[in-house]
Image 1 (cartoon, rainbow, N blue to C red):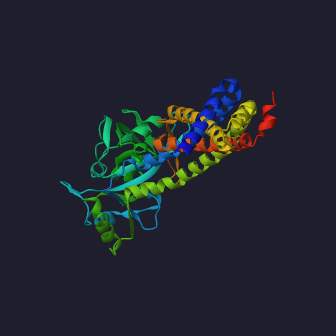
Image 2 (cartoon, rainbow, N blue to C red; image 1 turned 45 degrees about the vertical axis):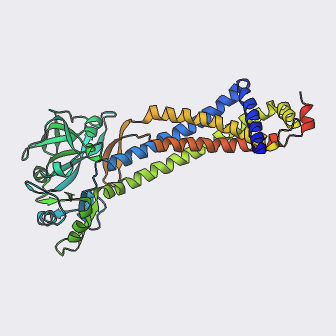
Length: 399
């Protein structure tokens, strides 16, 4: 055990000398830390947008909830059912049932224009017509202000995200849709889910306003248990009266978020990779400066019997320590700047705005620190090798 212990003590000694010399290299050290902090901050910030969007799209889904679309449809916008078909779906085995009947809600999904609070420009906002069972199917929904709309009236309730992002959705205000005016009577939450980006009203009133007859676009269903999904799905897909696609709500919303989250994640890694190249050069410059300033010190230690391996490891450890400090600074700044920041973006599969909050998760913070360690590792490698190869005799003669 003497050998390993002696080698570790050498590494510790050389590393300690290197860290003690940082005050003499504050300029280059600060630049390296700042560069790594920038990389990690941008990476975590951009990816927190994708994480927040993904969380919003899946937050209000339950294991015992399902959605039924027309076969071949990838969103509610291109789906469609008649009233007879929705009744067949509501009678399917596996559905949960309440006092008033099966917990299924045939729904209509249209897009309206409302001005954004931030810019005043119009954006696409989902207006959803629902049936009475919708409030039991989505059991995470709660009225925050005002009340629920009354059936048969031109009244709407707005999701908390939509009310925060768009003008005219305060309780008591009115919005004009086509030739009709709709009274906003309540604000609701849905556990941070995508429903908070929507406005809800009575499906029958919405059908009349848009001259949709007795048609719907989707059916949301509450199952008797998560295990009954397959029974529910099989009964519908094998029914000759129907041509449907049945999905768990969590799978549907996860699929809806794929395009945007993939785009954001790809751009985030691309930007971070480009910035990381600059950070690596900053780390290289810092560690080369460190090795140059410590030439005689390293040569003296080598002459006293310190191994070249201990020198290499110590320089690498110093580089990674500086990078981790930079990574921690960047991750901390990203957390305080982005976590919980509310915004809205287009869901390209439904062509409507989705409001969401950035989410700086623990996984993203760890990911950012791993990038910092990698930058420190690469930035310290070549200076470490140079330090280990310094000729002892010539290095001792340097002033």
